[in-house]
Image (cartoon, rainbow, N blue to C red; front, top):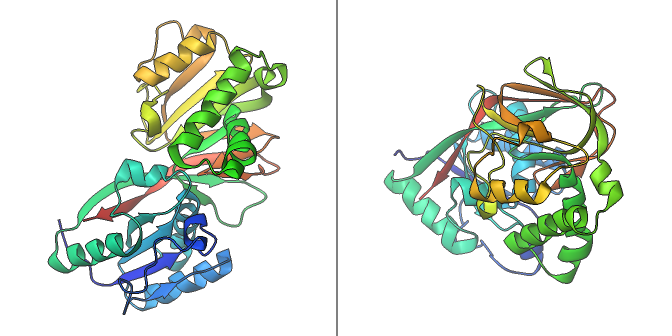
Length: 315
């Protein structure tokens, strides 16, 4: 446990909760360097200013997407000495906050963070950060915590179009989107979804069989939401990965195994490959999801690594 020198505050002005007037910070944020950047360029400028002002604890009020943008901008602004991050989570899902812990949103959360920093009682959680590079497209990699492609992108699209528009958010939206995607495949036999997409995956330089894939996931986290854990622990490296061939076989049984957090002996032969790795190379021509937002792949595909860590702080 240790204290912090100076706190800086980043808020997402597009956050639904903040637009609705919830979780104001005016009183608790008094005297802190703060910014509400609306663009990546504004975020980089704000973080560079924070670095010049000696900020070493960054309070981030927003969701997983806000955290992704902050993590992606830190190497360009803070270099080799990034600040610790405290999550004042106000997003739709808040996966990171649920896994690493958070002081809570708004005045109460920020006030608790300031008290703990002043008294030297902050708790810290360090973990690897996923880095997604799109060769031929990105000048700098994106950084985040949860990558998904295939059926995961379909679930994200379902949540955006069918659930968030009806006011359904947070864990309920995640559960309903994942359940709806599974039901489309299992019960309705959605042939387009079950057919997957052409992808080629290489794990630490070893290619997995080429072909159509139903789902690919990768994360450096050691747990996910809703009790699901679809990964095996075999291999070495900071990234957990899952590769499900299309069409998925025994999908209902595989979902139940993930809910129990245990791989079954039959799964590898049925097209469920999983493990740990230091580098994944993926070629695909369909969108992927990184921390709740959909992106297009680069012309040369994607390279996923976890070369750095982030430190998360909470009272």
